[in-house]
Amino acid sequence: MPLDKATVRNVATLARIRVADAELEHLAGELDHVLKWIEQLNEVDVSGVEPMTSVVAMKPTLRQDAVADGGKPEQILANAPEATQGFFVVPKVLE
Image (cartoon, rainbow, N blue to C red; front, side, top):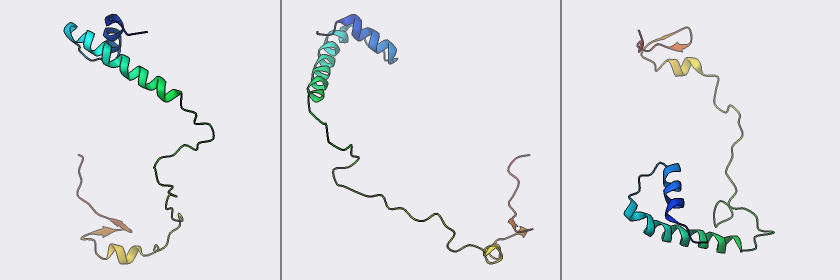
């Protein structure tokens, strides 16, 4: 069923897109082509096909969530311009 101008106007309103009346006929045709293309895609049998995020099978690289080089606050604070009680001292940004 081809789209009519009222449907296109309604879609444009819902999408908050201003469309001139002169463009409605043209957009109706284009949206109709898009919907037909989607119907064609829906006809493809994808049963048994795993969803994918890339055309190449990839396994995400993960690291263990463990502290590997911690426990050196004195060494880190040694480079700070100013430190107190184990913390960096920074200028006040809010009054």
